[in-house]
Image (tube, rainbow, N blue to C red):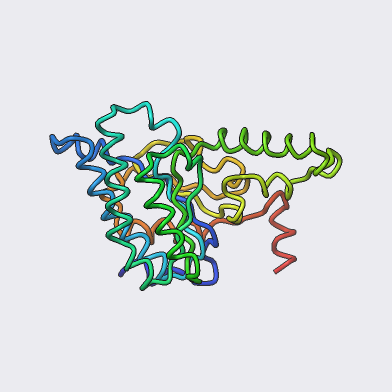
Length: 249
């Protein structure tokens, strides 16, 4: 029986984040270049996006390219940027048909011009869509996001736009790259590593975490449903006791 039948629609995460790890290792195991794994990984992205839409998940955020990924070989970085551009162009009609709004978070202005322009075009075309918000993190790092926020808030304090005593979590959130996203409810990482890798540090304060050994190109719908079923078994307390949670139900 497919695990999809075990999923309870009323207990799904509002905001799901995924660290898509394992493309390079998947390719290496097959004696191919790392970029081959990234091409296969795109197929998995399509499956998971499709499944998320079917399940009415409101926000899906994918860790696509980190600030640290620039340290990879130039050949791989260039190929990744070209793959991103081609994928965006190929999928624009599908995004429109599925009523998906594309969002991007990160230091986008430092992306190659053709990548930045294509990204802006697709975001503009899908801006009025009212279904799932699909966020791709590009040139993104959680610490970089926080540094960016501190600089923006400091400028406003200096210019008396914001007063120090009025700085709270909401003010901080408004100046993040991810300001238009709710807190993450559930974070999945594929590929066997058990770390956060600098992804959405502010937003995952109370996220449930799920790690799987499955490499991203092999992560299929059944693996996805298995993760969601695991999420639905968790008790999310947000600092409260189990007794308090039960009394509130």
